[in-house]
Image 1 (cartoon, one colour):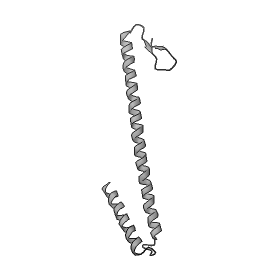
Image 2 (cartoon, helix red, strand yellow):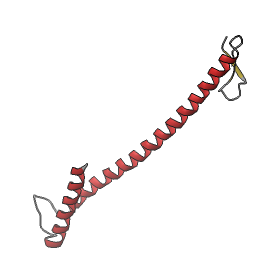
Image 3 (cartoon, one colour):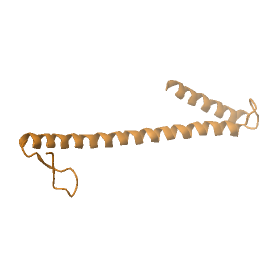
Image 4 (tube, helix red, strand yellow):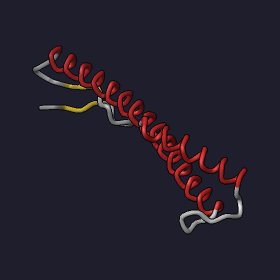
Length: 103
């Protein structure tokens, strides 16, 4: 990531110098506007990456919370089964269904 920071800083310096010293001059077959557009494209992608990382983190938290709830449900089911192995009537995790019979 250090190279990205250095690239960003170098591009900013080149753009500032170009803007201040020769804004109408072409360098390497390109204009200042084209150079700015390339830098903006990079900034746009970096923004998308940041947004994607935030979304990924939110999804991971959601997954972990759902998994924690499922593991609790598994614990409750195991406790119910151990408590009454002969009948194995369990509180159903399915809404609207009172119980589920494992026999």
